[in-house]
Image (cartoon, rainbow over all chains, first blue to last red; front, side):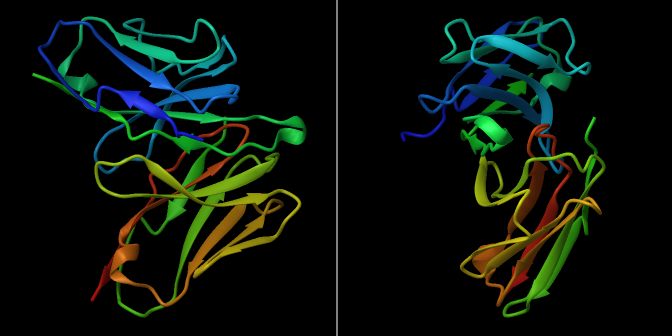
Length: 116
Length: 108
């Protein structure tokens, strides 16, 4: 168990640029979640995958956001034409969803995005 | 969609006090519930996971209870220490939505 890894840890970009974040879940975990968190708030759900299938996407997620998990392992989250309001911590979590619904989330350290 | 509420939003106590954090959720059809702590600028660290068949789960000075029928969970911290200062979050599984958390400060 090497834990959930996120890259990069910090990203500073100019408004209008595209950014991509990567998440490597714990191997054998079948579920992967993306969250966004701003100061003083709890993690806000963005989307999640079961293996390579994207099962749910928050309606708060504009069409500038896209996520993939092409082989059911690592995932990428891309934000196109970044805006200052996109500045936040982006968190990834993974879990092994078993029979009976038992599931325990493990989080990465997050990617802190600053849009200037 | 699951709605999660945590009360209080912030709590400040002197070292050594016992305290209770509350978590309520709207959809009681959950499999289990997980409590986390988050230090500033960091990811979330899992503290306890309570399965729906359990009523309590303990780890050291932490004790979490779950009442599915009323949509409530509590996290009890005994003999609080300054190192317990953090934000505490709960998440019912199946939906994995979070509330805003409780920001705890333990003063030495």
